[in-house]
Image 1 (spheres, rainbow over the protein chains, first blue to last red):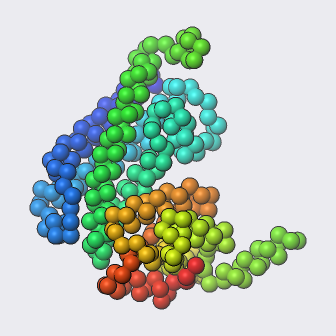
Image 2: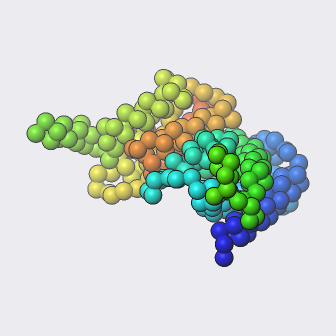
Image 3: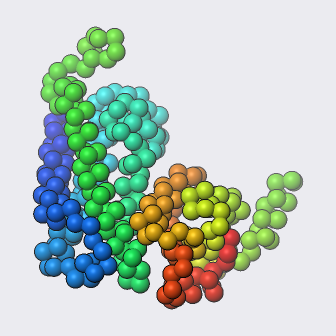
Amino acid sequence: MTERFKLNAVLDECRLHAEVLNEALAEIDNILFDEESITHLSTMQRRLLDQIAYRYAKLQDTIGEKLLPGILDLIQEPLPEKATFIEKLWRLERLGVIESANLWKELRELRNQIAHEYHDQPKIKVAVINRFLHGAHQIIGLWQQIQAYVNSQPYLYSDAPIYHQQGKPT
Amino acid sequence: MVMSYGLHFDRLALTAMRLTKKQTDTVRRITHEIFGQATRIWLFGSRVDDKRRGGDYDFYLQTTLTDPADIVQRKLDLLVRLHDTPEFEDEKIDLVVRPYQEQQELPIYLIAQSEGLEL
């Protein structure tokens, strides 16, 4: 299986997660929850929040573990063998694949925050959920930016030759 | 020789908790930058128990901020900044933040203050 073929499969996977995430966000209708509404969630709202949390995590995992490393491999950007994930993020930011390495890290922390229950801190719980819904829109934005980058580089998804700055195919 | 004296001194000073001086300085500096100088910080949980090994870093913060949305955003900023440092890279950190003038005295606040150590 070629690297490009693998990358196309990963792109399809991301597309699916983003699509379902988008649908769930549209269905929950950009609600800003408050203490009252969060304690009286309908069954449907609860399911949607679960679905958003699941697809958010899947989308971030697929992007972080498969898509970004795959892009770096195909771009043939030399990185130290033991480059950390953060160093890779900085490189991707510099290349314009992602807008901000910091946003990625923030969305990662947000995902861990949503796993807490906050039984005793209802105000904080509401703020975390509202921030998480905003974060779900941000991660879709991040995915769209990566997608736009890939679309602008035909060699990433087709047999087009790689053009480096000198303009010569390699 | 000088180095070994330094290490010895650090251990004496921090005998009741498993947090290095560098980690303590890092947490204090970044927390105060993000939550303000008046923020009080406690370490609690397994890291104040000398007999245990490893474990999460549990911090309890008393802040002068009141807006929950603002607190949640700053909490994210703090976690990103701490995980960016060599002292806390890949470490699991839990932050309990008490908003200013919160009337309710939650059990977790009481435990953190009574069993924890203020940094």
